Image (cartoon, rainbow over all chains, first blue to last red; front, side, top):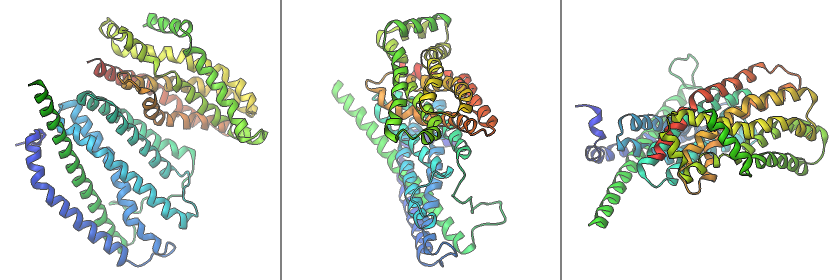
Length: 242
Length: 218
């Protein structure tokens, strides 16, 4: 019994069809609890006022925007090394989810930035690196869309994902050089003494878990769709041959 | 490898288009900017390093799609793949040839355009030096992008979308050095980082480009 057994599409489909409702339910539960608690049951923060409540969407979506790329990187590596088709399809499925998460983070950030910094957009390192991440997502998705042969597309996008990760990482630190930040540093960590105040901490963590589960649920759904589309394509080809 | 570079250089010079086109584009972009933002000398001086770097970036991009595409169309890429030279060296040679036909002329032309854009005199040395150091990275990243899109019919636009985000670190460090030099500030750190990116790109990207070529030739 190993994890790789689920690389078999039939097993993957069987497992995910059983797991899918539970993941959706857990995501919905966490999001409902986290967001309702965050929006309606936390006090307005000093200095921020009620605008702080957008943090319950902004921070989790930003977290998932980065993690989605990390997941694509791992899935691409698995595809390149072990040639499991489900892995390549999962990377393909994760990209549009990741790009939407990046957009949500950018848009909620702009909405939050307007009252707090007095501007919708500042060329701050964090904002800029998110915009760059968005561009990398677009390139990745466009390359998938441009190539017809599915295996070639999977190979080339995987190579792009590996090289792109290096450059996205470089860009993230390069922009620090170029401008000082407006954005505050991380206020949520496992090892630091000083954290975001407790009133906000728990609903925020629940929202983050909710966004993570939502991401998993969406990726499962989209991967299943991709597997089915691949099967349909194979059936059509077989019919044409006959 | 040397013969491959020489062959690409001859093709670039004789077959027309590629060689002068990038330079002319560089010139035109640098002329368009003052027309768009106005002839205010102090304003031009402030944006000159950035404009020259962005123009160099775009000029580099312009000739990328023909780097492998022509060889792909007439089948010589297949021959190169079966030649005794490893495909990694082919990718490196192609990148080198691209640099010799675009990056190097751009570097040499840049001071003249700096004059047009009223670049402060402290910035000229660093403008030439950063372009000389940074454009090889642009060529190698471009070789990788061209290798990814070589099999596509209309790869040109996609190539821009793939390659330009990867140009960002080079652009940031390159323009930063020139800007700091123009304002007489210390610029050693970004200069070293720029050199680091170039060396890393030259060392590693031929492998990525060759991998992409192999996938496309399969």
